Length: 532
Ligand code: G4P
Image: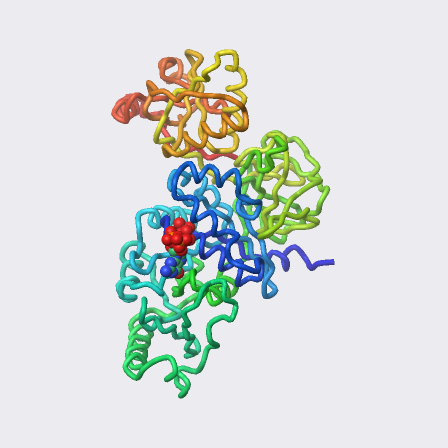
């Protein structure tokens, strides 16, 4: 029998990787799995990075990719710890999905391309982490290529992110002159040997920097330069302070080359040592504010993602439940807070890198996949009593709205069901105008429409056309019920409902939204809606 829920939660590390496309997230994911002993050879996850380049390839790979990559989480047991690596889609059109995934992570690894530093998407994702107080570990990747001066990279972290960088390592050169790095914590030099990531001989073992052996790897000039730089960072920078990291003020900085499997074990060690285990989650219980601690005996969690048709032979959907407390055991009954409905979770799935298995038990920090027929939605809170509710899973106002029509009018009814299905998964948002019979779908990026058309054709046999929509922007309404109702009654032609039947104002332009917002100061026009 395993130990208590508190002790089990304490050995969980649930984290996500954030980066700008091409910085090396896929390569790092794979090499972390390799370092954690979850996969034996490179190549399994890699395929996605390569094939994602074009849209059609991307969709094909979505369909073809094996369970190891379509699972939104990869779990592996290493060094006495359970790591749950949450997968975030790389393409920027899927940022909404990424945002939601980050709500289920306790820490994030920010991957920077050593030549490029902080890029736009890094910044955007970083802001979400900051909003949610997620501590960030920085990995400066691609040191085997010509890199920017590491001091400049750290300056950028500090000025663009207002985050104190605390390097734990310092690199010796980069590109063709990359020789390795110094572990500033123990003065060990880790030599870099150029090799392929499939070569399992590994890099040479770390050696004492002060000892004689280091001359094999560094000429006197390189050694002196590394010594000077190490002294400079230790003296000029703030020392690494775990508390400051956990509070989101400081980031430990690692260097390496994911592709050459260099620095990856050190990073994994750092995640194990510094990334926090699950912490108590704010929630409400029967309407009163409370905190749910990982060691609480009641099993609870929230759904942060729903994925349909993972197995094309079944119409099942998998809801990804991030556990927040208790000891979950297979067959257990959990109740959804919003509907009060109980469900027996008989076939929960845990996702390992190359396999999925039935989860016999799971603890706070773990993610289990619950197959269901569309009962579970993103944002749902589940617990044994059904009284707990976790907030904070936002829906974002879409940036593009389109009217959708099915080519064969006889299939209009099917279209409704299919669109609702995709909206429940969070692929796109669906709005039903109060007047008229059109459906308006919203997305944050164009690619989402293409993926949607592709899925409607393949999974639901529906040929659809997206047309320009008379509306340009959607806003959820907030405020007193009376004020909202009054507004809705006066603006029926511009009102719609989302899939939860919440009122949404559909504006023809942002100017129009500003205009009505000024005239109805008691009504809030919101860009995000929290679902729970
Ligand atoms: P992403 O998921 O963040 O989008 O990045 P991905 O891992 O797909 O990596 C993007 C490109 O950067 C890939 O090259 C990959 O091989 C390369 N890369 C990743 N990490 C490193 C590294 O540490 N060093 C070097 N030199 N390259 C790295 P590609 O040319 O797009 O693909 P491929 O032709 O190499 O397969």
